[in-house]
Image 1 (cartoon, rainbow, N blue to C red):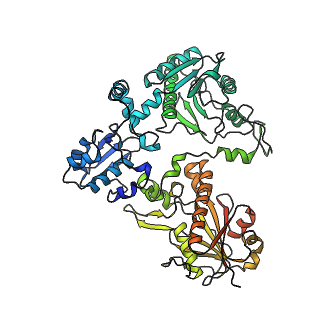
Image 2: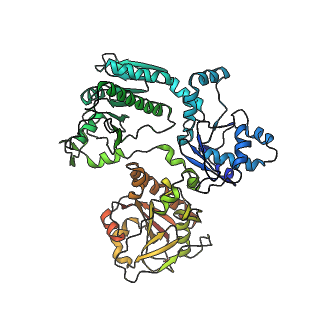
Image 3: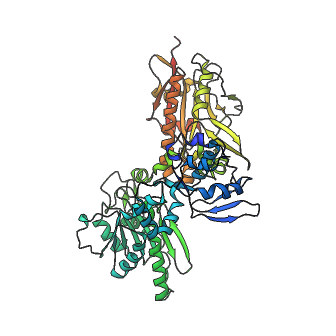
Length: 578
């Protein structure tokens, strides 16, 4: 099934191990998937994530299983209705459909009257929301997503004519309430219990409102500059003042929509507000992504084009949402002085659902993983090694602590950084990593300094995770690295090797933008934990070191410290020989 050759065989045995992938109690087929019949008999389904189904069993599945997936039957009842299908095969097929967002939970805690009322009032919208349920796993069914809207109140702040249009667009989605406030917000906003403020106005009006709504989550919409954003989550993302301070000094954009008559402007304005309503639904339900917190969506009604102003960072020293946090190490074009390091760290955002996808199922969750993986490897930079072309296989069949040290190092590297490579039908390979990593991109690159391991010459090595080999970068006398190795040495124990975890920051940022930096640290931390556990089981002691000379290690390993940056040094110690 699918262009990536997804197969359902034995899949449920894997998915049953993870709570976020366990099958619904009463599976319901997501109905808001637009089917396109392909020339080869396959079926292309357009929904939250387009997917293609094909194979000899497709027609049987569409005719036999799909009609039964109405949310009223348990899996056991489905098995009884399909006596010729083994339970394990049925669960495998359902698991594949569920992982691709084609099933939702039909069982609901609400009453029949409540479900009927919701379906009658918001049936088409709920069907639309159901196609996104698997993206975040926030809700198990369309009813949960709709109830989230029904329990939330939104405040619309703006001029009367803008409030009226926005309120009319929000009314049909089933919010728990909509409060209208003027731009001066003379009402006591602190007493309002709302999930989200939507502020409509120009930059000056937005900044005045931002000062009043300092600790509130706010979506800003500018019908004059034709923009949506930022979505300000206090303490986590940029406010409108942050945006202005980062944009000042840039070339002024050409006038937008100046050639439109009033009727056209009104239509475009209504469309802009409609887009903002989509962001409101996304934020409150959590079933699909609201605008990325570092993005601002910009429209050009004259050309009918849209664009993103990306990488708009939260400024820790912003006069509206920040505080004074020296040292001031950079001056922006606007003249604003800022703490560069803190600005970057605070802007590296994290979405929790990215952390719960085991590496073994990455190939099923994203059809692009194999393509990314083929292009993800960064060739280690070899340093002054004219005759350093030897390599030593790290494959080992023994796990006994009494094995030679080289075998123990081999096992540690394989079971932590390595994995299983399997050919992919479309070419290339799928890599099933032994340790999960963000996007299955393996950002934690292992470099090994061998100091005292029988069977391996002293020197600097790089472990190739796909080929499972240690590649020599250069041979060094350990005495020449004494200053670098001193912080990880332990009294009474011999340091036989040092593993330097080098983060491929550029690899992650190419996919996750600013969040890639945080993921690189998470990947390194997970790997360090893995090394520590494995080392103990192999009769070694691991000592992680976070405080080290970055530049010195970069020179030693031949990395630039930016795209490839050392983040953690782990010493491996054995009992002293004497």
